[in-house]
Image 1 (cartoon, protein in one colour):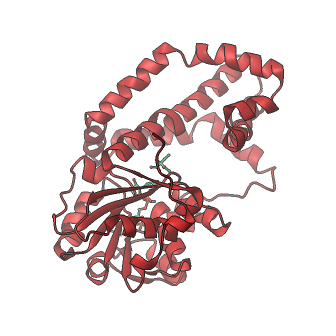
Image 2 (tube, rainbow, N blue to C red):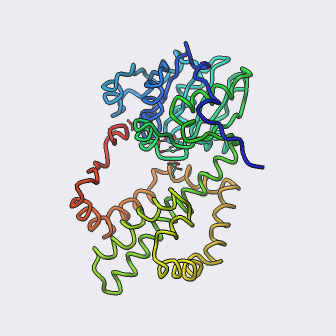
Image 3 (cartoon, rainbow, N blue to C red):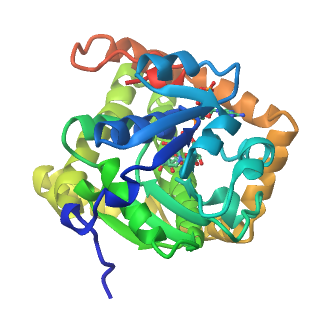
Length: 342
Ligand SMILES: NC(=O)C1=CN([C@@H]2O[C@H](COP(=O)(O)OP(=O)(O)OC[C@H]3O[C@@H](n4cnc5c(N)ncnc54)[C@H](OP(=O)(O)O)[C@@H]3O)[C@@H](O)[C@H]2O)C=CC1
Ligand SMILES: CC[C@](O)(C(C)=O)C(=O)O
């Protein structure tokens, strides 16, 4: 049976009227939820740690910025928008002691609750409002009158209207413009990890780099390899986004389409699908979550090394050079507060 999709007229901001909403963290998701909600007429305060680089940015955007514990004390609805690895520390130190009966704890990803890195008390609502897109796009699309499709999930309904609160939040951030549907913390967490590791981020970047390396190692110019394997990918994905795979195939040449349907399955073959299945099982068993928490708690040496290697890959140098020629591609500063990346 098809899922029920909630759109603009299926949700009301009423459950948030007269309430104070605290967004803890002002990064990619936090700044987007906070700004969109504020512009939808919701009263939002920001909770941050004293040395946060984002305090000034949030204040400049017109928010009252408090230390995390004080923001939780003041709020009826508390969104936890700090990195998943940091949630246990922030939750235990600043959130749990101030989480009085009847408040609502809101997440945009189920990692901490599903893998039990924290245990919320049973006298509060625990809900999720998870846009299916990066926070910077949640913000950008809202300002353009659009909205990123959004999931809601109810883990605990203490007040009896937890779903109405989730729908109100989803509407406030623009989610009902793109469509909202209900899931569980388990389904969101496992599918989100699968998507980002296997297809959206991990799978795609590995595919792009492997294609780029194959062409460059065969003696083709890096600029050619960049355009073929990364730049044009966006244009092809735009077509799939607009009209599905069939729509994309309508626009490309028949030669490309024949190569697509005959060669594609030889690249993403049964071995690749078996690898995907193995990674899904690791996610479902909590093995990935454990590995990631252990890596973080050990000071993330592997992660830092792999990040550095990624930044030094030749595709980044040639890409930076080619993008600088395209005046319509906005120049992006990576680093600093996530909230400053617009
Ligand atoms: N990035 C995304 O688009 C998506 C994220 N999510 C989820 O959203 C949540 C937040 O992730 P994301 O937006 O990427 O996080 P970011 O890394 O972008 O931002 C984290 C924010 O938390 C702040 N912070 C760090 N430590 C503390 C602390 N001890 N007390 C208070 N604030 C703190 C950071 O401060 P400072 O600014 O000083 O660094 C920053 O403002 C996660 O659960 C994630 O899974 C879900 C969907 C997509
Ligand atoms: C694809 C990455 C993502 O899952 C997302 C933007 O939805 C994330 O957690 O950042």
